[in-house]
Image 1 (cartoon, rainbow, N blue to C red):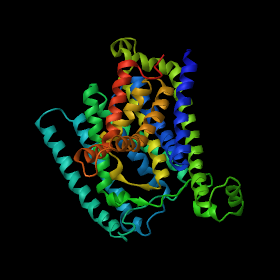
Image 2: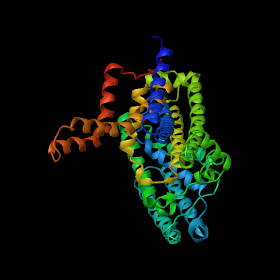
Image 3: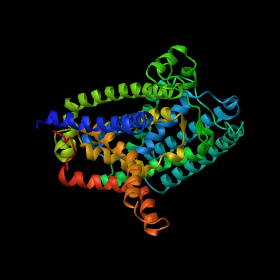
Image 4: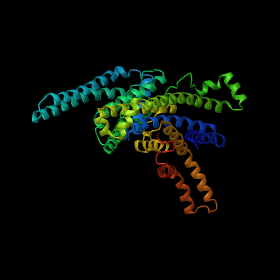
Length: 437
């Protein structure tokens, strides 16, 4: 079987599984799997840029995804009335003072001769800057969080169209990646993994605890949708033309409006995925892409040929993180809310890495295939496991401890299946289902 035919069949199998879900369970479930599969595919492309192209082991994927979600709140939600006057400008001033403190410490470290006086001066600059920063920051935060805390208590956003928040999410993640990369990319791969995981935890901890920014664990609800491509179910149910089309398909208005909204998201997500996939493919085939793979395969040889390895690593780290930020903004838009506690770095970062490894590290189409396949299994394995355990225990008497134990164990089928699939693929196809050429 030729490679194009095999790859086409693999994508056809995954598409068939999603269609089978629609026919056997519900089309709402099938389209939800499709939408999250599209978002997961974008995340997988971002990780594949970093690992497949450059060999960078980034375990902080969820941190950049969370920053993309935060960008949606800061860009698309309406501003909280009175928040900027009460403390918004003071918070901006305090953040500028904090940045100025860091810059001053760096200047002291570079301009003064090394020695005890330099160390004492740096400590003094940091201490004074910290206390000044907190003296400005704390009262302004308290003033914002006191504004209607039951439904607000945060600074709000710019009330711009939500589609603008998607590239903004990429820019915010890229900016954070640049700051992280300037300090962490000099580390060896295992230390880089630990550093990025720790930084992701810090990002999510800040989002959980800084209520003035995005309400913390109280969450932000009612995020606008990208109208007019994706409307609201209530509006569709009051449209006579839409009701006539729903009746023609034999659907009730509620089901038809829900499917229409989800399909609108599918269309937008598909466009973004195709654009990013095309750009990643063009980059892979370009001289820049060949250089990145040469650096990945042998850094010493590439550096001997005059390539700035650290600079190129920073480039690809920023690009991959920006793609993950876009995916995070899209996911928050789909959910209609920002829930910082839902970002679990180790668990979902592991899932994205499984997608890339199973699909084929270094191959963009492999990363996309792996994303759809793994997300489908992540959603469906638990109910399939519950059905299987119920079938196995159907002959056991009610109240049996073994029956109860086997049925309860179905909740663990997800992680068991992910590990099993990873082991099988690494044993029989170690380069993934669609390996790199």
